[in-house]
Length: 118
Image (cartoon, rainbow, N blue to C red; front, top):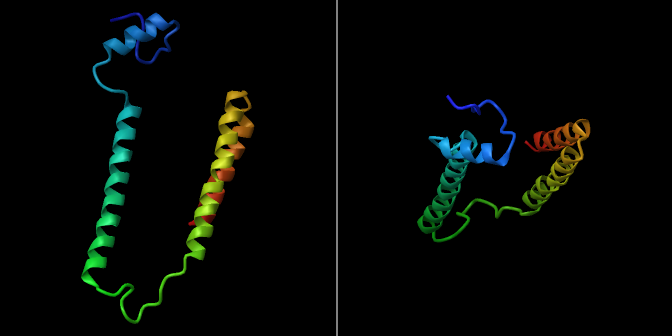
């Protein structure tokens, strides 16, 4: 067994490099990100395929009897979600400055806004 275990933080760059070389698989965070990107890709590919399927099945869009959708509400809601990136950037800055309480408050603010969005 090596003197630097997986649960122990490496204290030098040499130790960190050695632990990285001895690792048998990619880190869990890497696999989590791969799976998340895969599911997002599948979701958007399905939405785009649905759009083209419906578009080619109906010569007239939207079909007769359905009003054309308004773009005002979706644009406003998209703007609200984009604005929640501001507290998240603030949370990152607060974390780097060592102000954990402020970081948690900003993350909570972003989550509340996104929760109200739903």
